[in-house]
Amino acid sequence: MGATEAEEIAERLYGVRGSATRFETEKDDTFLLDAGRGKFVLKIAHPSERGVELEFQVALMRHLEQRAPDLPIPRALRDVKGADLPLVTTRAGERRVVRLITFMVGTPLDRTSCTAPQRERIGEILAKLRHSMADFSHPADGRAVAWDVTHLLDLSDLLSFIPRGGKRAWTVSALERFAEIKPELDRCRRQVLHNDFNTSNLVVDHASPQFLTGVIDFGDAVRTAIAVDVSTALMNQMPKTFDHGNRRDLFDAPRDVLRGYLRHAELTDEELRLIPFLSMGRLAVRALLTCWRAEVFPENSRYILRNTDAGWAHLEWFHAISTAQISDLLTR
Image 1 (cartoon, rainbow, N blue to C red):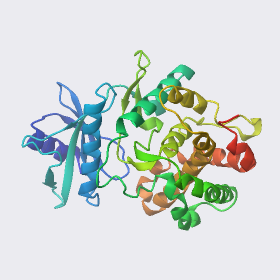
Image 2: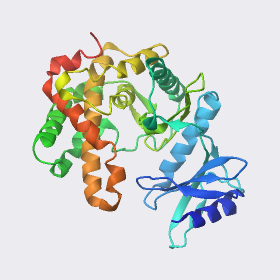
Image 3: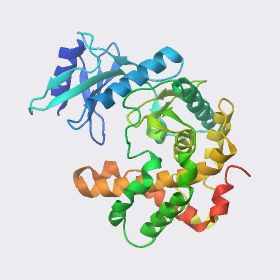
Image 4: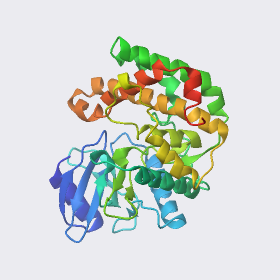
């Protein structure tokens, strides 16, 4: 879908006139809509998206707006007829669901840097989000999300898409170690959680005392283990460049996030022991899904693989240390 059609949809459904600029995304057609008086994000869902899952995302955002209005999350807007998820027929003849949400001003964290206190702030917001979601439920909250690391072993058929040699060996090692802790993970506490606290979903402002000014993209929110949500946030604070030879600890920066998190939310000793394995598992999920999707959709491979290269050195690091050392990374 082009920007002109997106502008027409925004004006017809929401009465918002502005210029649209496309965002790079994996599936949806998503646009920044600059309306002069404000900026919005217009999302036209992929035809394969299930309506009940989109309803879940909107309901969750509305719940957070009521439960924790001070948290920096976007607001979902209704169309001129009061509908949360209006349908349009595109010029290509597809029936697609539309959403308009407020734009969070700032810089995505993946385009800038942060200090230890700022990483602690990220952990604090993650903990507050957890508490605010604790009593939320929805018929679609138990959906299977491929990016939920609890389903890692279901992705093992994708190993053939991983390049042979070290990369495949490191991924296999991660799968084997994850399989060992999976029974313990299945017994962990669960609730609805964001499940994708990666640096492209965190909007920041270095001039703001709050630093973290926006948490976006609830597309992977799901009912999962609390430890999974934390592990994803920690994995995404691992260094983008990593020299395997200098034996640095991958969790140096992630521990700052954990420190902030623990100020507002507790974790059991068992959860703390499992989180490094889950971070490793999330790296394997990313490797498997992105290598597979890049082959299926080669025209979008640059975007799909944008974070994959950094993860190979991380998987190699996990491969080089013992299971006991992984267990002790956050409990020593």
